[in-house]
Image (tube, rainbow, N blue to C red; front, side, top):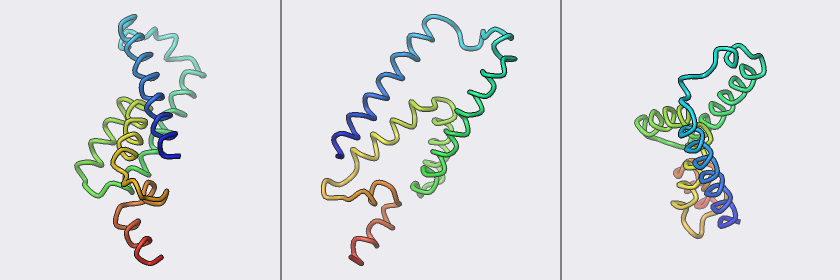
Length: 119
């Protein structure tokens, strides 16, 4: 299952990266038509996306111990969205010990160690 998740999130990362590069080569994001900004569906989609980013960040905030890492991941997620989120999951999966269970992926390393020692 670990390999499947790693492949899936790496694929997500590459797909998002491809479309982001393609879009940025096509037009400047800062030159968005004001009509687009006033569109209610654009606004709803933007709010939905950023609340989703923040929801994911709650897990990152919980999982990371360092305030520097927390801050850097917040900036990355808010600027890069799903690109940063998929990169975070890929890194977590790569750094996950081979014998680790799913709890080790989802919780702080100290919590996973406590769970393993009490089992």
